[in-house]
Image 1 (cartoon, rainbow, N blue to C red):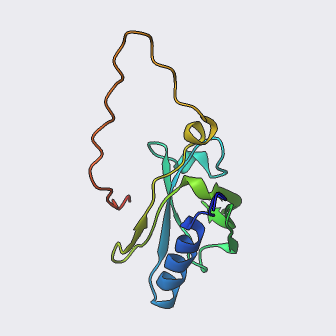
Image 2 (image 1 turned 90 degrees about the vertical axis):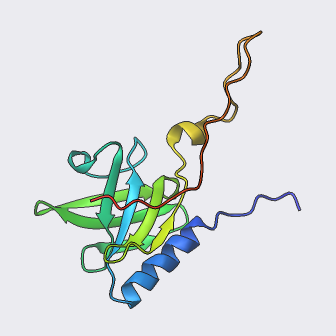
Length: 139
């Protein structure tokens, strides 16, 4: 079977969102804000934004396989939000931090099909020591 399987990420995001809402928790979404995202730039900190995606805080919320779209008010002004699914780095409950973190796919990673070529005679750089991924609450 050579066909590429679809990502499980949108299904997991929908499941955690539903779990939060059904249990009375507030679902928060951590997003890498880049040129592909449509978010209020004045609220972006260190290239990230955290958004309340509760049904009471959003209008027309749609969590599709390609991305997440909704309308929300920021300082009383309604804004259209679009987040490519690749930019979602976590979804979690505000009250207890339970949720799931993901490795975001930045525009550079999505657009770079091949790795940069190494200069001849230079040893390749070792990969950074990653360790275990962890969820960090951003306020």
